[in-house]
Image (cartoon, rainbow, N blue to C red; front, top):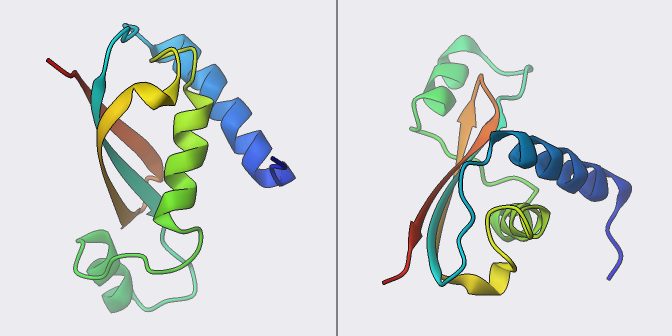
Length: 110
């Protein structure tokens, strides 16, 4: 399957960052919860900016949450898990933030 350059670059960057920051490798089934914090658009009012950064308004713009999920899980194959097929439970959230980032919480499935 073809990845657009922007997606391929994102996956490479996340993969490299995860290699540096990772403390564990999960060999079995995994429960995952992911928070995607995307940048707030610059061309909005201060009031609207506050509404977005406090979670009153959530992103309903592209990229879609499922695209974020797929790119993130693929990028972390071989680092946090052998393959993302090990994920048996998944919850994802998309928010605005002045500090764009991805937060991932993993738990080994018992």
